[in-house]
Amino acid sequence: MKLTAIATILAGAVVALPAAAQDRADWPSSLSISTGSQGGAYFVWGSGLASLIGETLNVGASVEVTGGPVQNVVLVETGETLLGFTTMGPAQEAMAGESELMPGMEAANLRALFPMYQTPLQAVVLANSGITAIEDLEGKRVNMGPASGTSATYWQRYFESAGMNVNASFAGASDGAGQLGDGLIDAFVYAAGLPTGAFSQLAIENDVTFLPLSDANIEAFTSAVPSMQPFTIPAGTYNGQDADVPSVAMWNFAIAHQNLPESLAYEITKLVLENNERMQQIHASAVETLAENWETNNFMPFHPGAVRYYEEIGITIPAELR
Image (cartoon, rainbow, N blue to C red; front, side):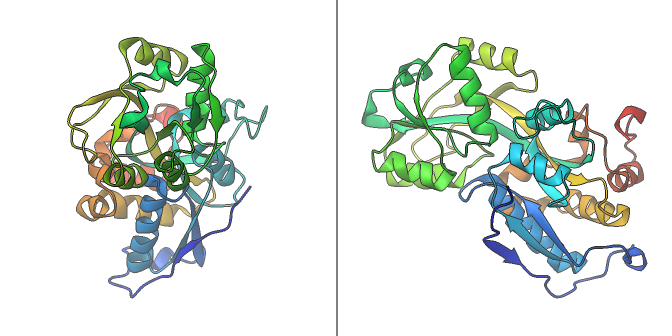
């Protein structure tokens, strides 16, 4: 399942050794971060984080192009990668033994590091398509992102629960946007942090419409997936998007295998949460990457290294999440 890494960021010059430098004996010589498809927020996030880890912690880091959260959970759980990104829905299902990639196997090695941002579901069509609502996608050609990603998983569930038949296809963010621009599909539905690079480029090159979710759509999503909550894509997020777009979203977390050395997990968590301005330069969604949002995780144990950092800044992690 592990796909070929297409971007590798080698460790840069050491700015300053971390405080726990004397505790590096069990650190790996390199790290691989499970992300998502090119054009999506995960890939941008992972590339930036890998560079930051290299510069500051003097550890070579690389990004893995994957199918997204569902696959990332499996890669981290099995130890194929020590770090990864996931939305909370797929992680909770994997821990309950309900992952479509590990049916019947309860993920026990996953550990939370830090909150990232909310991932809204997004749906875009060409403005001249005549499509104005989610219900109009009945019978249409719809790309849903990578087959094992959060986007495909939850959009498919919605269409099935709504009794809608769509002509589904699956491709990464950049490919999906390109197919819509070329008229090969009628709609591109996706799930990624704002702004999604592929959507930004699509909106610059084409006159597009971002479909709003109706109250009924939102109720159906939140009923089917309790980890989802109402969300608004702000006006101006994309070129030509002049109005707010109602949607739903799930929180993303950075996760690690339980065997990631405690001192390294501590340093990575501290690095991200104490450098928010740098993280926002990597991706604007990091405006939500704040320690105070730790409580958006209410089921996955935190890595001991992350717990150590939170306690240092006065946050008490409940016993059931240790």
